Length: 564
Image (cartoon, rainbow, N blue to C red; front, side, top):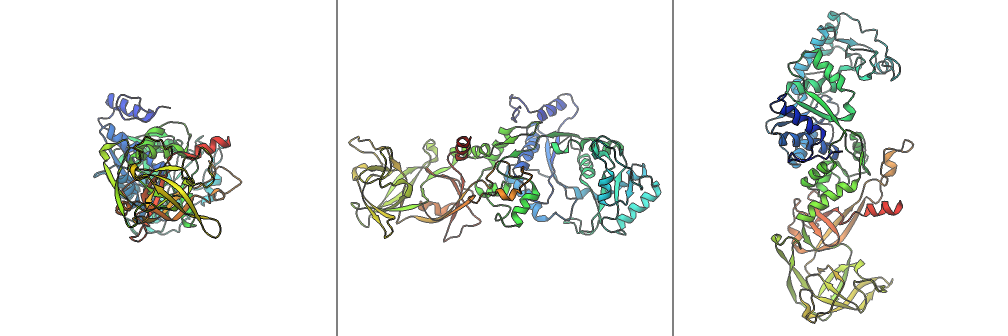
């Protein structure tokens, strides 16, 4: 499989090869693509692949890309979804400029095209029920059966379609079907429905219409109206290409866009079906479309993923013709790689254990200098306060430690990063025998973390000054499902594979005080913990909330390898 690359001399994927050839041969002087979402849900990671392809190819070949909403089903569409889609596309780094369109912009023209098909004897009003139409369609090995209404006269069909338009008939009582070939080996071509009755208020046209065109009829004609050159869609529409071409050829339209199919994005440990995502939301298994465990674009944004990391992911997986599965770790590595370069390093203690430095002066504190990024000096430095009482990670202490445990233990010396060398002298426990406090001493000659006498200390741990700590809630997110393919088991419902540990809430975390100024656009590496960001939606002035974006390493890869 060739990878999706920018046109910089590197191999092009097969779609970009087609575009490049069309431009080179003069078939097109410039290219026009489109991203055509249905406004019936929030976009997900699979849509991101299509967005990056359509807008990316247009940018690379100096063409343009339209954002067009396929709003032909008023029962499921809303302005809320429209606005969320616009926000997601912009956030990913793409701009449609003046090229914002809606299928509903073309309702009058689509109606006229339908009338033209009737006049040409290529469409008829059918009164079979939906179930009867399916029964008449036939199978892959048997031809379909013609509708008893298929040979109505042109005049009768024109009259019935006009009455459908006028609202005389109830929903489901009749439809308009294209008259093609009930014996076609392609079932899509067996007289497909192109208009149906829906007496619903439309989010843009109100109650002007009570009949609405079907997707396959709408899509090709919308592409034609906008002079799209390359209509890029996923493989499930490959069989529909014949209908796409039939409509345009039969109507002899002034231009004919080329439909090209590519493999959709399949990623493990998740679902991307809008119906299933909606079920997760409506049944309360997640907190909403932007729940950080959801691979919706809004969920990834709230989780802390960056637009650059998602664009990088889409480039890495490439564009191919064959269906395949992408490991979740590839997406997680993309954000790790991006944040490793750009995220400010800070301290965050998620499971705090109090440490009292007994020989540090009471009431005294000082400011120590810490690097914001150890490999990028241009990111500068910050000041962190230090005092007699600090917090360390509970996992950084072990009372009966083995020899190769290089963190805190009684009688052992450890380095506090950017601060001092300390030695644990005493352990304080509660009535249940739980460790609640450590008593340590520090070496005042080791400011900055190094000993003037050159002695070596193997262990380095992070810490937070208790006096200055910012108390916060931290949410650790994991994969939403416990199995790679949650909707592949035909005997079990995909909900049965929900991961009960996909969210862990830590309510008493101690962070650097400077994080009180964090915004939702900031990304941080909590040293030794992972990458985090402020959850701007859930945070309050009294209790900030931080989301873990991703761990420092792919722990699931280790689990999979061990299980194998």
